[in-house]
Image 1: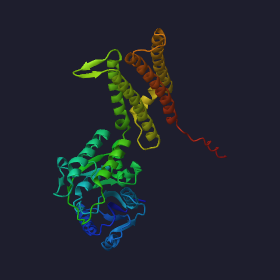
Image 2: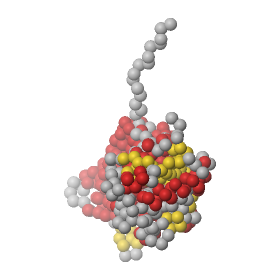
Image 3: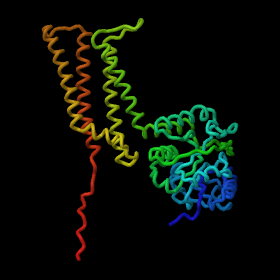
Image 4: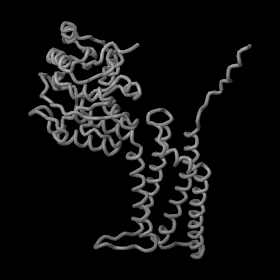
Amino acid sequence: MPPQFELTILMPCLNEAETLAACIKKAKVGIERAGVKGEILIADNGSKDGSIEIAEKLGARVVHVKPKGYGNALRYGIEAALGKWIIMGDSDDSYDFSDINGFVEKLRGGDDLVMGCRLPKGGGTIMPGAMPWKNRWLGNPSLSFLGQLFFRSPAQDFHCGLRAFSKEAYDRMDLKTTGMEFASEMVIVATLKSMRISETPITLHKDGRSRPPHLKPWRDGWRHLRFMLIYSPRWLFLVPGLLLCLTGFILANLTYWVPFKIGSVNFDVGTLMVACMWMIIGVQFVALAFFTKVFAIAEGLLPDDPKFSRIFRIFTLEKGIVAGLIILLLGLGMLVRALWVWKQAGYGSLDYSQNLRRLIPAATLLVISVQTISSSFFMSVLGLKTTSRKPPAPPEAT
């Protein structure tokens, strides 16, 4: 069915009797000023303070959401929305729903997701007392920076709660989360799917509650960071893995032949052992990055990546096995050499440092060879494509 309204202003609500009326009244003004046919929808997540009665009295439509969680309230509300465009924002009177022209104009221009920007660098304004210092100077800038770094998102205010999107774009996003991560997932998926994302400056006001907010800065900040890392195998596994491999390889080569000294610091066989450990962990991290990427694409959590597909075609199972066997032969060669030196000493005691300098690299190469071969097989298993085995329908009789 075609949308019955141009715009739905959606507000998740849990015991917001103090501020809900002000938000609804401002939303009515915003709809009138924007010149759109719109509705106000309250996604109530179990209020017990009269919020539902307030919303209904003021003419807002209420959808009752039983599953708890910020994401659940928004998901159910979006599904129930009758507008082709949706503006979502908190019902604590921190956002001014009477000033939505910037969102509507960009939606009319064809943008898929329009983010509000509270930050001065994006033209926004944060009123005194509207945002705790740790959110303003630590949490929000850090998470926004990581969102831009990890996903190349154009959003400067990555976690602004006031945003607009089309119902059609939301359906294409196919979001999965039900908690606070819902807001992060929306921006991440829209970015990864190359949707049209823009920003419009807004003003963040001090909320009108007399009680503490539902948001827990440290807990919810960690949840957002954790989610971004899980959605970015490159930064969670690949980059740390490559750095560990590189630094481990350099240190191992420097300490393999003879110990060296920088100032008063000695680098000897202990450094060699740590460097080899870094290499083993690094190889495992790189493998995990590929495993995660293949799984996420297969499950629809991440969109197809042409660059990754090309890498997957180049580094086949057979090439992985060959590379693993070459590393295995090198490790066995070094181990045989160590045994030969031991034999020359009559299988007696050897210089501790020199013996470990021969054995540690040999053992490291053997472990990496097993990692390489087993990872190649596992990657191939993950990359298997399942196809329907249902036989085609017989042709109709003529």
